[in-house]
Image (tube, rainbow, N blue to C red; front, side, top):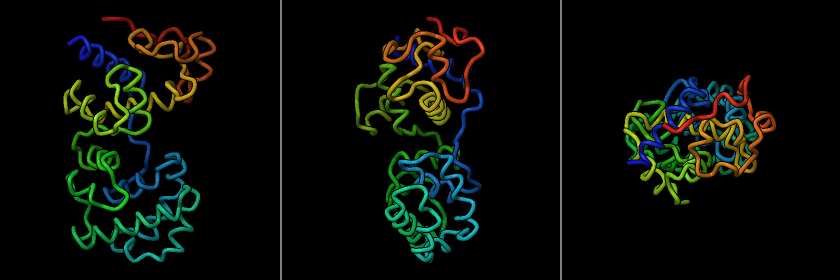
Length: 237
């Protein structure tokens, strides 16, 4: 119970720091989010958002994508990196959607993970943000922060998903994922976390992994630097 209370306190503090936490991939349909998430592997959401308007204007439906010219598709998504592999996945998942689901994105995890290039992480992104079905997205940020917070010791995304999910009410899983991703991108960096400017510093077993001086830590925070670096620090409840 102590772990649950601490975990939920951390989530509340992150909600205060990131009230606007959301999926940072632009999309207008489940298909667009599915494809954008596949393209986001090993690149930034910003880069994907630069590519997808052209992609979806050229191929607005799964049937259009399934019949896409591979060379043209590769040219559109080239800047996202690993474009040949990603093009193969996009063509494969589009063809599977047409063949199995009449061109529509299914709203079940069990179905989504059968599509080429789609694992549990991508499936949970789509379910949580396109269909409103709660899910925990275990990307590199969620995994790293979950281990730093002491919520899990596992490196296995499936185990992390289960162990973190057990600490929170299911209805909050999607927003929890957004907050962890926001925090991982902006403050709790992989190589040099900004511990001294972290809102959950006093609740974090990994405090001290990064810069603890508040002024120097504030300079490491990306996008959202608090006016008073000491202000966001959480306290034990």
